[in-house]
Length: 85
Image (cartoon, rainbow, N blue to C red; front, side, top):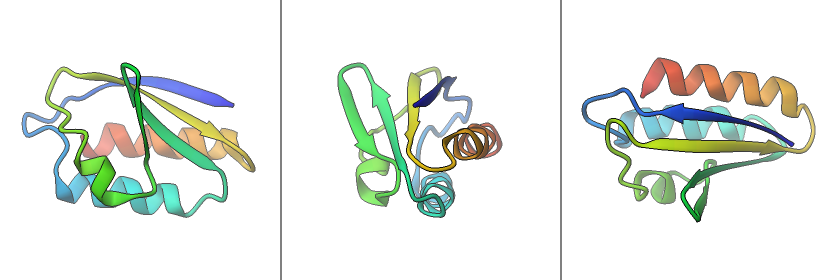
């Protein structure tokens, strides 16, 4: 398992456009990608739950990647978060 912590930078927080890009990248990997905010976790591959997290600027989350190619997937996910939100 690989994980990283990220603080939301986008003033609009998590919304449809960045969530769609992030979900698409997560779907390209066979393993599991989960976003955790506190005790609540959502599957990053599923767009609606990801949008439903209602993440705001300044919120800190943990993204966990498990399975095949987890190191590459974690690096791609971290880059996607930095580029999109």
